[in-house]
Structures are given as structure tokens and as C-alpha cells.
Image (spheres, helix red, strand yellow):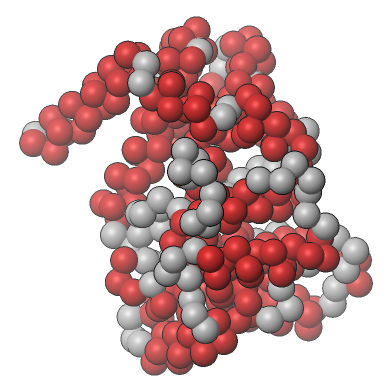
Length: 305
């Protein structure tokens, strides 16, 4: 990936081009979008999705839907148009992906971000479909068991990586009885949109789409990027986390550190600090494999109980 951030005016074109390189992305965009939306609007089963989508969209910060320069002049009509566009985008995407994809919290933030960049919903649809093909299977599943298994897998991987790379922090978080669900699902499901600043999120999505394209390095993956950024944030927060004596302040510490990340710092974390090779080495560490084996054993015992 280029070390030079993409100019904002060129980003929609870049994301569309990268999306079309990813196997399984929506082709052709406009036709697939219109067909999926018509089918979704006719399905009785989608009514429950629409209710949840609308509930989440009205709680989504308005600034996510608009460019910073346009936000001060946004009126009620423009805001309602964005909400309606986001509803149609999420319904069409759910329909296009079939039975395996439902609607999960987190998708509302991604839809809002895409609609702040793309004037046409059809273009945002192509990029959202490409992202969903690139991200871990189960991350937005409508099957509660599959969704839970995906989140548990991510939680276990991150805690296992901590045990391998930072055993002192791992032990400290165990003493505080930290549940990774306090922060990890929000980071991963929202693609850090509610955690990082807009410019840093844009750079992250540049890298996710680039990494998912066939021409990228086989050593990297979109899932790996999310794990590496999670580990980078925990590593940057390490001294403050070690000094914490109450579990309640941990999310606040992580959030304050995340707010300092610029696009350049995100790039440095992913390609100099937490590289794909470092992730591979950490996953081969005995502490990591031992932690995952323990988690898998506990899960199997729970299922058989």
C-alpha cells in the first residue's frame, strides 16, 4: 500500500475501483442495487430489519453522514434524505448477500460513512458489498450463534496475542476481570469508525480494500489488519492500562489513545509496528496457542454441559 494518503476527492473513485477487483463484489452496481432493493421491500421477513435499521440510524451521529465542510449547513430535509438513503442501502445489501447476512449494529456506521463520500447510493452499495465479502465470515451474521462464535474467536485471538506479546498486560487485565466485549466488538464491527477520527478511518478502509484485492500480499488480510490495529491500540495504551486499578476506566483510556491516531500513525502501526509477519510470529508463540486451546476447551465443555 502506498505511504501517501489518498486525496479525499479521489477516494470514492479509488474505493470503487478496488471494490470491483474483489471477487464477489456487486456487478453491475446500479442494476444489482435496484434488484436487491425491490426484493427486500417485498419480503415480509425484512420488516423486522427495517425497524431495527431505522432505530439505529436515528441514533447514528449526524456528522458521520456528511463531509465536515458541509455539516454546518445541513438542514432537516438533507438529514432525512441521508437516513432514507442509508435505510435503502442496508436493506439492499442484506438482500444481496442472502440468508447468511442479517442486520447487525455497526453496519449503520459503515453505511453513514460511505454516504458521506458517495453521492449515489448505488456506488456506496458496491463498496459495502465488497467490504462484506472481504471481512470475516460471520461478523454480521443473522444467526446469533454464528455471530457470537465470530466475536468470541476475535476476542480469544486478541487476548491470546496479548499473552504472547505482553504477558504483564495480559495478567493485569485478567486480574481486573476485563471482558473484551467491552470494546472489541465495537472496534471490529464498526471498522473503528466510532473509535478513530474520520481521516484515520478513511485510511484504514483504503488499506482494507487494497488488502482484499487479488494483487495484494498474501501475507496480509483484512481480518489481520483489524487484529493488528487492535493490538497496536492496546500496545500504545499499555502503560496507562497497567496503571489502571478499576475496570470502568479502561474503555476511556483506549478511547483517548485512539483519538490521537492520524492516518500516518495508523499506517505506521500496521506496516512498521504490527506487521503481518509479526502477527504470524505471535500466533505461533506457545502462549498464544495455549490460550486458544484453553478457550476452545472451555467452549466445548460449555456446549456439552
